[in-house]
View 1 (cartoon, rainbow, N blue to C red):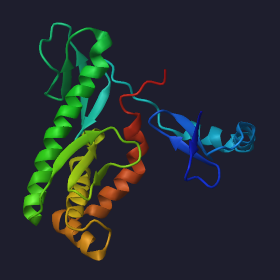
View 2: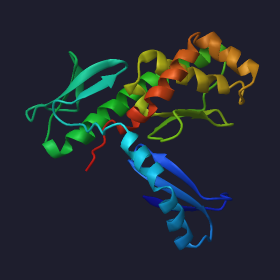
View 3: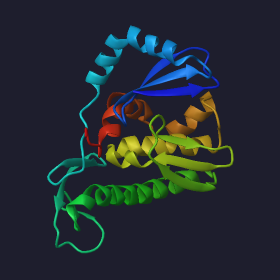
View 4: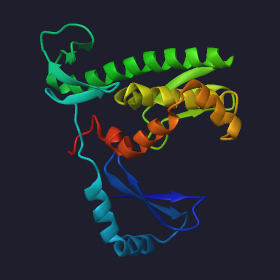
Length: 220
C-alpha cells in the first residue's frame, strides 16, 4: 500500500495501481496519518477484493507467451544468441545471461512499438494534413496516449501488446487531437475518418487494460 499526499485532494480516496499490484491512498496535504490509517481500515474488505481481482502478473521468462499485435509469441532464451533480441517465427529470441532476459525482451518490444507507432502516426498525420512535433514512448499507467498543445504525441509502449486495430485506434485518437484538442463531434469525425471501428477498440482496452499493465511484471 502506498500513501500519497495531494494538494488538489479534498478528501481521501483509494486507487488500484495494476502495474504495481498495490492500493494507493491519496489524502489531502497535511492530513493526520492516523486518520488515513483508520480510513484504510474501514475499507479493508474493498481493498482485499480489488487486489484479488487483479490479473496475474506475467513475467518475461523463458517459455512465457507474449502477445505482439494480437499474435502470441513464445520467449526463447538462447545463451548462444548474439546481438539484440529478435522476433522470428512466432518466437521472441534473446541471448545473454538469464538475469538480463526480462530487460532484453522489454527492449525488443519497446523498439518495435516505437517503429510501428511512429510509422502509423506519421501516415495518419499526413492523411489529415497535420504536423507532429515529436513522438515519445512511456510506460504510463492511466493513459495509452496523449497529445500536447504543441503537437507532441506520447504513447505507451505496451500498445505493441494489443491487437493491431487497437493500436491503430489509439494512434488515430491522438493524431486527431493535432487538429482538435478536445472531444467534440469534429474530433470524433476525424477519428472515424481514420478508423471506422473505434468503439470496438475502446471496448477492448476497457476489458483488457489491466492485463496489459501486468505483462512483464513479477509477483515477487
